[in-house]
Length: 130
Image (tube, rainbow, N blue to C red; front, side, top):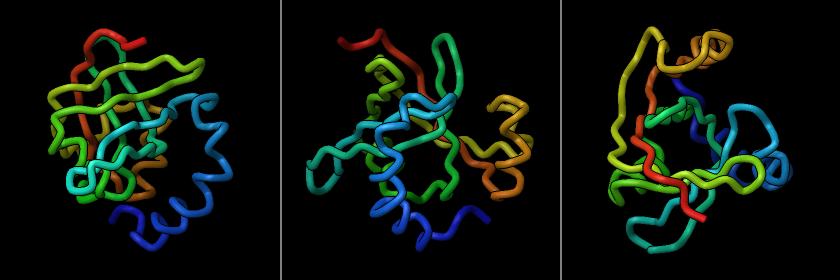
């Protein structure tokens, strides 16, 4: 079972604000910039981002039914920001259930197994935006 929603609310209000400045400096982490599907409000969510070439994978540690995932799917994409402000545009997002967790590097798999996270948001990457 993925992480509980109560932990997600706590992280959104406390942990994300404290760790926010570090997110783009940590390996495998990035900011996901997306727009609220109902409010139209811009959001920034820290995510674990993997992949190279034309595909990126985001581990869904809180499960596939999160607000950020709904926003990204409804919009058909989002932007990720990595260290140094590097931006990538994500398009054609889809949720993939992968119990083997082979979509992510092997050092990450044990942690995702412990969390019960086997769902991923997989997106194609378009050219970076300045």
